[in-house]
Length: 387
Image 1 (cartoon, one colour):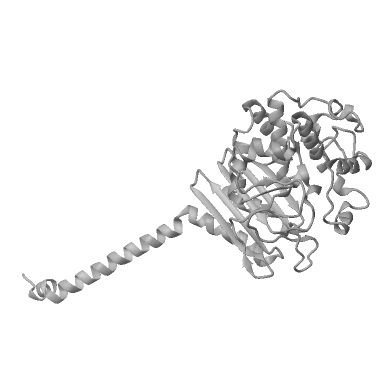
Image 2 (image 1 turned 135 degrees about the vertical axis):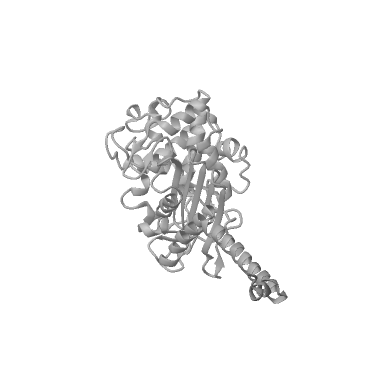
C-alpha cells in the first residue's frame, strides 16, 4: 500500500533542500576533519614543533639570552632554521639567524683539515715524531702527530695553567699573544701523563699543529685555511682571525664568561690571538652547515684519509668519542666550541644525512646552559635512542 505521507516528505521542495543542506554540512565537516587530521599527523611538523619547544625552553628557563638552531634532515625533507631570544640585551634586539658568531673550538676542525690535507699530499705523516719539526720541545721524540691530533700527547693545556691564564686575559684583554708564548706556557706546566697514555683535551696540541702547518707551507695558518677551505666552499661570511677584538660581519652580542653577571658583554673584548689555531674562526649557521657537510661527507680529504678520520684513533669518553680533531656522538661527527660570550655545536651524520648547528650567545656553567644538551634533545626528538 502506498504511503502518501512518506512520499510527500521525500519529494517536497523543503525536504529536498534540507537534505542538500545536511549533505553539505556533513561533507564540509568531513573535509574539515580530514584537514585537521592531516595537520596533526604531518610527521615533519610534529618534529619541528618539538624542536621549537625544546629551544624555547632553554630561553624560558635559563640565563641564556638567545640561541640559533639549524636542523637539516635531507632524508625527511626538514630544513628548519630558528632564532629565539635576545641578540642584543642593551636595545632588546632579537636573535638573527643570519648573523655571524664566534665558533670557538669548532675552529680545530679547520686546522686539522689543513693538516690532514698536507698528509694527503705527502708533506707530513701522522706517524712522524714531533721532534722532526720541533726537536726543542720537551719529550718531542715520544709524541707523534697522531697524538697531537687526537689529544693523547698529554701536553698540558695552557688555558689551565696556574695562576690561571684567564686572570692575565682579564687584566690585559687586548694583549696580542704569540702562539709560541702560549705553547711555552703549556710545556712549562709539564705533562698530565705519559705521552700516548689516555686522553687529555689540550689547546696546546692544536697550536703546535698550527705551527707545523706554517713550517711546512711557508704560509700563515690564515692563508692556508682561506685557500684550502674558506674559498673552495665559498664561505663568504666566515673567516679565520689572527688578532684583534673585532668580530666581522653583521652580528649580535655575546654575553658572560662562566659566571652570570647581568649585561657583561664579551663580543669584542679579548684579543682573538689567544685562541688562534684552536678557536679564532667565525661563521654563520648556513655556512657552518656547508662546512660540516663537507667535513664529514667528504670532498676536503682523499677518501683514504677521510675514512681514517671517521673510523680510527678515537678515544671513547662517557658520552662522546674524540678522534683526529673531530668529535663523534652516535653517527654524528663534528665539534663543540666555547669561548667568552659564545657556545657552539656543529655536527653532521652521513648515515642520517642530517646536519645540526646550535649557537648560544653566552658562556655559562651548568648543563642547562650547554648547547650540547639541546643537541642531544634534538637527536632524541629526531631519532629516539637510535642516533
